[in-house]
Image (cartoon, rainbow, N blue to C red; front, top):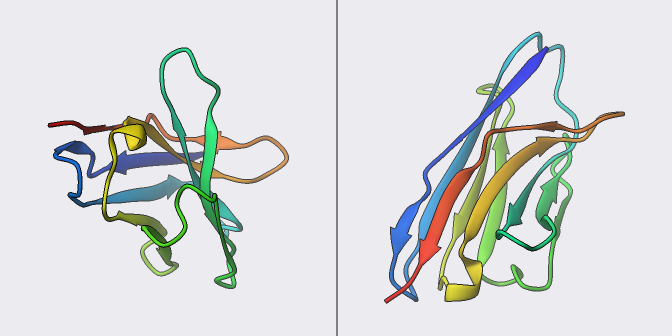
Length: 114
């Protein structure tokens, strides 16, 4: 099986920045499309961004212009750089691998507050 581990979360003030990482390990042949979701307690998990194996990228409207998703296929890692963070960005951020059934990481907490 494949395991995904996120890191890089933390607490920042509004307008700050963070870079999240997600490393895949285990029984990897090749990684297809991967992405980032976020979730606040009491709300549904929300798609933030995706990136295909060939580098095709999508963003949620809330992320456009502020977030950048990228990947390093040699390191089996994807990243999410976040700038101009807002309190509404506060959530647990999850990495996922899109397959017949999605594979999820454990999540990393991002908190944006004064």
